[in-house]
Image (cartoon, rainbow over all chains, first blue to last red; front, side, top):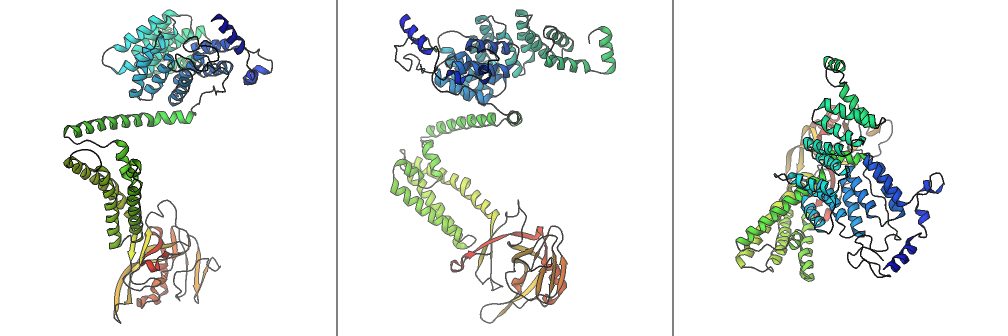
Length: 265
Length: 346
């Protein structure tokens, strides 16, 4: 088998026409040509900062170099879902599933896109099938939890807990918080965002999401603190600045004056 | 070669993974890796009008309803034909083609089309209604023929046939006939008036000017601002006097046109008009400027009959010929009866 591996490695090391597929920026010589893991790394970094548009672009770059990266396809679908382009995400997940048949994460991504489009009848069996596949992944359980959110029992919490248990990364509770936010469950979203902050207190995006959740729940003082912390960690965070400015301008003259006096501005 | 999806070790030279079916040559295949994107306006529209979600809800509700109907029908011993047959019943003969019965299909479809064409030709007459009934009969016979080929007790098949015919009549024919009647209307002539003869039936489109404005050259049916009493020849040599408040003629000029009629010559903005009225007629001299939302239509069809003595008055012609847009009832398309005189009215 090792012999076969070597043969394949030789075969797939540099394909003819691969250079032509590279983005124009790579050819000019300004930035050095990067490999697909580096593009994936860039994509992941952007995703962790909440720059989903950039992350999507980097996932595409990675796939330009190596189409067999299932992480790239999955990332593209997930970014499309974060960008609220559900029909496009569904279409793209279908295309990816044609290449990677029965891939559980892609099936879960398609189920998520379908459920966001309101098609629970199609999404449910897909989600079940994704969970029935061998191996364990946090994303499948996140999708499962999202599908269970409409049930009267607290099943979604168990699914999300399972996801957090499988993957201790702070991104998991944060993305669960985003799921809750999408479904307008502010208090539950805040719990998960808080969990993410506990895991990664040096990540500005966690503080930002926590601040947003608090702002939506009307906890203005706490939201101000979270957004300020986000700005301390990332001084150029435009969205945090905008939200903080909005919070500062809220309330009457007396209220604002009192806030400044007490040092809560 | 190791599958990048399931990590299964495949033999070299194999193109598809033996375990999961993934294409092993993906790395070299030409695949577009840039996902489709939604435009911002599309995303906004989706937020405002969740059509996808509504469509899914309708689909789910209809599938649940279908399931219940099927279960109820089976409970009373009446098997429901498959959906692929049921929707094909909407077009006569289509279900027969699906079942492989080509000759029957053509027979039903042909009969139906013949009756449908005759219905349209005789629209607005008693014959038209009869042909519409025959077209419905051909359609119903086609449906019955298919339903009677389905297995089941004769009673259940009869009930199913009744249901299908009722649905066809109420859901297709009644709305179609009413809708068509709202758009295409008819007028029949009982005497020879102008270019029209007794027994003529003309078709006009009521909806022609709902979106677009009338334009010079159109032949229209319009309401006269004054009621006219015209003497027409009845049966034999008898003269009948009939009252009319509708006329058919061509629009000569649109709003804002300066119209001068002197010594039988009509001038529009100082030039000869591009369009003529339907009947040539000598009209008393008058001059008028067509106001906004009004049209110049000379009701010349009454000129050839022994008409109202007031027709010699220039004031009457002035008031009759300038027609407000609201009085234009529709665009006249063609004479459909008698068939010997069937032709476009232009």
